[in-house]
Image 1 (tube, rainbow, N blue to C red):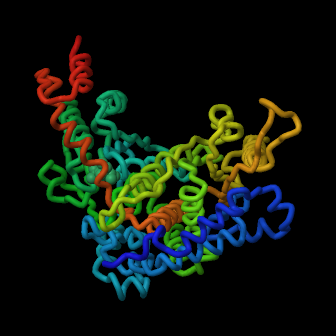
Image 2: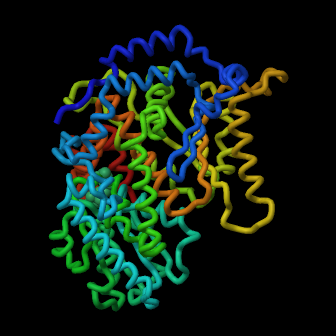
Image 3: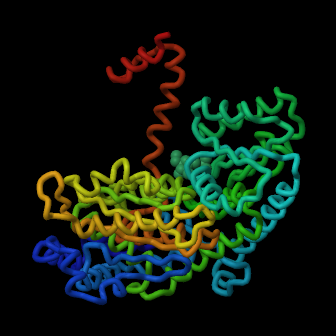
Length: 519
Ligand code: F6P
């Protein structure tokens, strides 16, 4: 597998640096709008189900053209095509990266030609899983579904079930247990009856310590509280079907090593979503994502929403030196989207070496964070408007509300628009502590309605945006070695909490161990 040119080795990289130093560093949004009446149109991009207004960002036509040149020089299109061709672009694990196949229609001629065997497996599993989901949806004795999983086996389904609440059939409650902290599982179990509960054990590897500990405790609780018929009350969602069987679970839905954990909500890991919104709803989610895949795969780079966003991310991180990006969904059902996107972006692109293992001397993943609007406005927006750091902000707004409470939605949307406007225009007539510098960048996404299709398209857009910046940075966005060390050390420390043995530990860890053992 060959990779493209790393961005810092491209001639355009040096040209961009010179462009930044000479002019772009002093770019002013207010002047840009005043001098270009076509700016909104030029920097807006329609894509399936998602409209993105990028015009309030610190870019002009010349900057964007140069970033597009950089993408071409680095071989972005070839790398994208390599992913869609099933090449092993996850080189450190020697795996293909084909989460897009999970949302590819069964009759797609291209996929049938290239990945026929995998596509057939995808649809056989999808059909079986959705048929089972419909059966459980019709079983009114099951009132509570408990998903036990962590990271990619938790954040996606949890976020989507909440986001699509309008489409969730009444009669079932959904619970998500991820933390090894027993308070979480204990709190959920307290309200449950075994005969009315379905546990989904979601783990790609079926080895993750938190999930295995919670699964064992759930099974123990189930039998000790009189539960019978594990086959009916437990299902496993995993690539490691054998381990699930040895655990005693007969109902299993599989997926494959070419689906990364943080890219897995489209697979069997999405079963809670299917249980919540039904087979048709789940297929609509996949269809929305597929439409965005096709946009990413075929639209020219200059009209490609994920590409334009990914290039902007590189511009901000490496030339402006911004270290974080904030996301504010102006829809309370999108509450868990920031947490989901944190894993997607920071686990994918939080890397310090390139695909060959060579150290990078430029920044990669920004810190991604956020809360729904308008709540964030009354908490940390102060810093966004007047702090000393510039943090690009992303708004997500939904045109049509799905409630009928008078006045609320116009107030919500007005706030989103006003915040974006205030960040840009600022206010300098008052001076001192009342001064707003303005020229603070933001991106504004609009969905017409928060449907499964729109959510699927938005999430796929984000996946491909992360792909774009990762490809330019020359990193493998599909491994996560950085999570390993802490797991190994926790295994060493756990028995020491019982024994008190502090031998070989640093003084701080030893001191804290002693404190945590004090009763
Ligand atoms: O520790 C990180 C991680 O490997 C994530 O990448 C993954 O989503 C999560 O743990 C859960 O892994 P699994 O689905 O194998 O339990």
